[in-house]
Image (cartoon, rainbow, N blue to C red; front, side, top):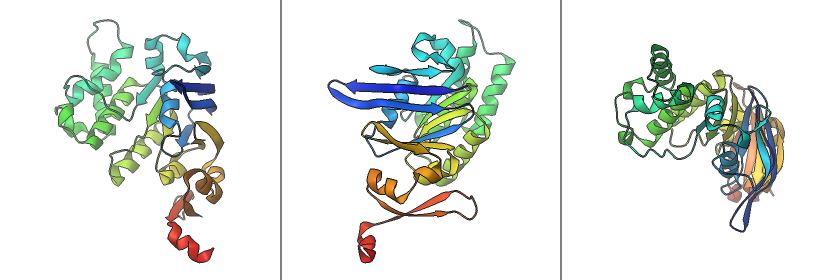
Length: 261
């Protein structure tokens, strides 16, 4: 299953946030969105999962305009883990994760044994089985993030949209979560702040700056000193990590770079 944004533009009042943005996520590909704060990453994702409606252009899920598909059809195929975790009522972790089964049910249909097992597996995969009976409001920010990922897993969608999935997580859980997402072999698009995480896990990376795609390609093609200087305003030493074979970035404060200029 594929997901694609085609020349998507979006404005808030009179301010253009996205300018004819096009990205393509092929089946079972892990695509990262990177860029400075305010570059449009979250806004683009919100257009892609229909929380916002493009001013022009369109988003295509499995070769069909997402605006022409029913909410239930989309929910069966596409799961979202957003930056925010808005929960209006204080559900238990188990109940919240179980909501991921809703798109697969008829009105008022009760959970079956299959549903219970899927929820149990999602809790185990995200390492939160021990939190099953806890109230969502009692959890830390990192625990809440893992609950929302577990709910997405219970949804069993083939396309996964992630907006800062490692936010609030410690290093161990960041890597565990990204390892898990990678092993699921889903079609994934994720907005990422940590460029080393993006380098390690993404097949393709799109770089956003002021609402425009300025470049895209493999991590090796995109994560260059020139791009980091031009887009992020930072100096970086980029090497190939001996264990992962992926690019690894070490940021260098400007005060040190002046010694060699």
